Length: 193
Image (cartoon, rainbow, N blue to C red; front, side):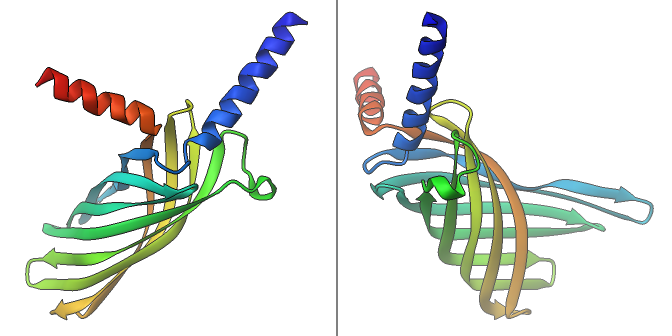
């Protein structure tokens, strides 16, 4: 009986801690890896890799904002394509039990806006970049979440092509730091310098 009650207390603590990671004042730090993959066949091949490092600040419970930077590289049929963006992102987390996937996960919506470009030899689009999509964060520990994000990106601009669109499935991870832990890390770093 004692083991069962200890297990229940641990499960309750993990559940409460998971939901506490999206509270006002906390940080999220991590990256999303987008479109990792390739097609290798006779006469046609392609390889794609992208990364989006992230730092977000929870300005209120379940709402994070931060800078957005991303880089994608695609090599297809002896051509290279580079996609980049610089701007800001926002995330809204939902802790509604009626849409809960599991006790250790939470749904979110992400949107971003900024300057974006898609560049290749002889073909480019640079201008306003907009993106949005739903995602799911699954907490493997109280502070580390694995994420999946289905995202639509649109670039409106100038160049040889005036618009580009892209749908991507992003997989990544985030570290959710409580504001007190983040302060301690910063103070320790200052002392070591």
